[in-house]
Length: 205
Figure 1 (cartoon, one colour):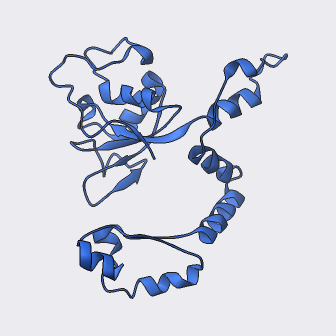
Figure 2 (cartoon, rainbow, N blue to C red; figure 1 turned 90 degrees about the vertical axis):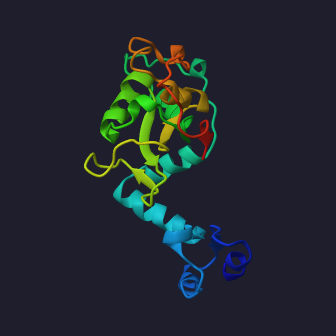
């Protein structure tokens, strides 16, 4: 870390270690700075034990995380409706497992709105789940931020759970004037001058 920062300046360093006890040695490195550079330490065993512990408190948590970081296909025709009329759990599980994490830009129409307001609109109108935001400020990544500490502004990226990056684009193109009565599939970039996109196109994280 010290050599990399000395050669390339303020570059973010992410280090994977085998034993979590070695983490304390990194904090003695002169140029190691989590807040300024965003340096991170990853220990696989620590992650495994953390997921195991969280699953004890919240059953199914590790399964949900695993499904979000792994790609899986979903074919509705492979599932049949339950005979008693209730939703087939295999269908619901397959649909949920096919969703992944994406980041994407937010429409300028959402500027000044709170996270709960935009999350509700994305869920009801766009059928995508907004779980957090990535800001250009020192706050970095925020999950379900309180209305008292965060409102959408220029440069904010959304963190979504969705089936593909195409549906995430609807959050970037949404316009209150043009798409008030439109369905998700009908939401495309309109000709309004105010509907300028902030950030790049959606990408898988």
